[in-house]
Image (cartoon, one colour):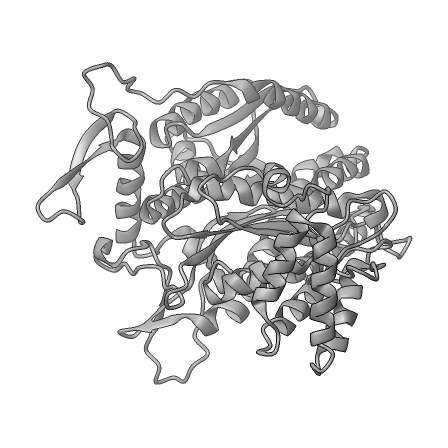
Length: 556
């Protein structure tokens, strides 16, 4: 009897970002990319397994349909051993289920999903276990298994733990492969310069020039601007979509593998296409030319399924993310239309797919010396905040036929030594004694117009550009925000004085108009604050200042 075996890597970003050395992060991201391509193919070849159907095979996960239970068990056993040996510490869940006939395949798939859910609390120890006399890697604190030359110390060495050693060995082997690095190939770029331009694009692998190895380049920053953006984007409504498709094909179980594989590949294709075009439009023009090499101001870490994790130069992070979310909507709309048409025409199956998918993103802005791992957790928390805002009942589209939630972005610039989740940051740093919130995160992007008031990122962009005018005093705006913390009455007076002084400024009317677009109903004495009933008062002003600070590399 046939059987289903399902595998899914978990906490991928945690595995990738457990080091603050960019080269190790790059190596880990390439390891993850290799899971469902090179590594899986080697295991299947070793087991002499052929003619296997996959209903999913991307993003560190796969669902394989095998001829019998013995084959599935052999794959599970060897695959589990291989993952633990090649990617020690990577968390994963798996499930296996035999089924009788073709009509039972959906029931078997549900059983496998329940097994994976129950498997989520598995422990993943990394061997060897450190004893009291074991030397440890100073970078990770894990037991060291070898030592390698340290490029920062002339003639010196550094102790490496097992996971770091395997990451670096994988990168060395991948770099020697003529086909290049898999994740980089997904975003393979083409220069639009003249035919005489022999320069080629390079994705950076280090943050410091003294750590460069052959064929490597350090991350290009904008002068003294040391900010980078750690971006995490995730699609909306994918779980609901998969449940709907299961209902649509329950009468056509013979098409189960094909439909889900097509859907998985389509979403993966849309994410890659959106990321590639956003990179071409927003990042390529800012590539830094060094000795006929164009060094990209970014480094992709995860790109597959409906997920994107990427490090981007600070001043480019918000424009890139905005463009990616807009293009993701467009790509899924186009590809979903093709899928629905194809299955209706060729198989007479009505797939109730949405018009397309939307996505939300979180951006944590840090300086290059700050830890990536904690920044990613903040970016993930910001993405969740954006999703919560987009999924709020009153944030749905004005169009009653539009069931998708809007795309949105939430961002935060880290200015303290403690990096926490975004809810804690709001409570500890951004909430005044009067319970006013000095942010309006998240901001809507994309084509969907929410039914309620949902501040849009394009309006915040207008506001922050207006505040860069030489006639506007940054000091006065900063003082206003400080006074909201200390004395709201003084803040009202300060805003009144500032408004009177700004009457002669040609952009003042536009400034007030943009504020009203952002906050909705504005308070007369403090129009930077919302005054909606039963809603915490908020201001976009601090967000505008933070964005400008990132763009010019200051802490103001």
